[in-house]
Length: 501
Ligand SMILES: Cc1cc2nc3c(=O)[nH]c(=O)nc-3n(C[C@H](O)[C@H](O)[C@H](O)COP(=O)(O)OP(=O)(O)OC[C@H]3O[C@@H](n4cnc5c(N)ncnc54)[C@H](O)[C@@H]3O)c2cc1C
Image 1 (cartoon, helix red, strand yellow):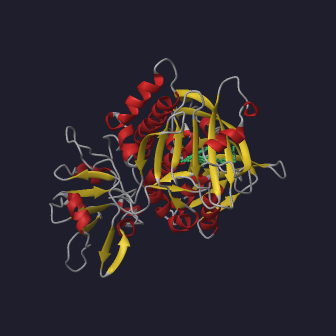
Image 2: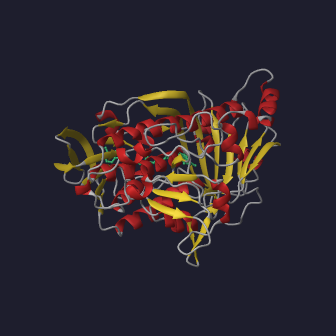
Image 3: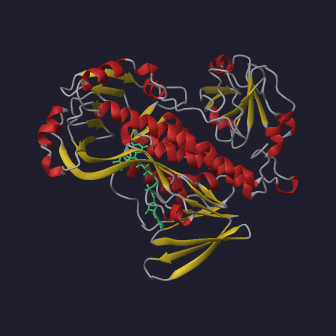
């Protein structure tokens, strides 16, 4: 079983680590030998950190990142309109972390280098894919010798970024969810810490929308929207930076980016699938571009590993069905926040002040701005979300408190392991669980039970079925037996008993 991952950006390497940990051999290809040196992403939420945890790099990430205080929306005079605090959250990690992307990519690649099932080959470019008889022939070019080679794989993941070749090869197109905007990104360093609030400052001024934030270590980031006819030279940078209290910082890089709001209309053709920026692009206002891609990798890795081990091929159909609406929902939140920040016209400032004051009532935006919770996955084959049950946990990640097991305190995901699990605090456990090889984890104080009053309270007498990617698939009383039967692998190929129920 070999999967070729095209692109050694953070999403491709995350996918490779997650697949390799499930016993799949992975070849990662990239045009470049080294990590892309320019900082791009600076923010990750706590849901995304659970993906890094599954990939084995969350503790190393914690060492190079710092928790972020929250988000302040400011008016044109830099007065605070509204503030959203971030704290410890329910996922076992800070709700928001700040970091520089090259640091993250370097530690992910170091982890990959120690993974016997994975190999990274830089300096080669994917040219073509051809599918026959359930396998994929990959044509690549060695950029040093200019020679073309062929590699056969059981599946190909297109993690090749915004200008994805794989996306083009499977005939997918990007669909616009909002306008494209030009922003100037300014990276700063200050050896002496700047006297600034340690969260993200978002200036909601149509004349000059801007963002400023301390990143990690001595790094800071400022971003300014450019009008259609403007260039970076038109911006009085020292004055703009002084408004944020960053006059003393040294500018280490300025770069202009065009931010699109787009989702691909097709994420799969047979055994060729898309993840990350290849499948979606978002404006940066809620710092979700990479987070979305990490979720793609996490939610696809176990399905693909199960299919390669003989599971039902239809599992792969759920990739786009689950991920595309989730990505689109968050991109729309980013577009909406962007409009609130940047919308102009007569009376806009008054409208903005009123709208931001009522942000709790704006669908989608409130969950994200008040906490870090992203929308639950829609009802589908692997998500038995009940209709008309507000507050159902189904489709969202199970929380990750610390649990005590045999006197040891560990994060829940480390107990859940790689497969499906039922969590119960004495509630009903449908017969499917034991029969299908699903682990049943009982909460309580007895021998072999998990002690965690927080999780017992969260369960509220229900039992929940948790997928390998920590998403709640179902909750009693609607545990569907069909879910376990449908995705079970044939007995002959059940190598990892807990991968699929
Ligand atoms: C200024 C800026 C700020 C951002 N801030 C945030 C933020 O705060 N939070 C957040 O979550 N996201 C943020 N993002 C988005 C984030 O950086 C991207 O979502 C993320 O890098 C996408 O990762 P990826 O692995 O999908 O793609 P990339 O990182 O683009 O990696 C794709 C890889 O594929 C390789 N490749 C491409 N084509 C081929 C080919 N044909 N053959 C071989 N290799 C190929 C490339 O060399 C590259 O290494 C920001 C982006 C920008 C530009």
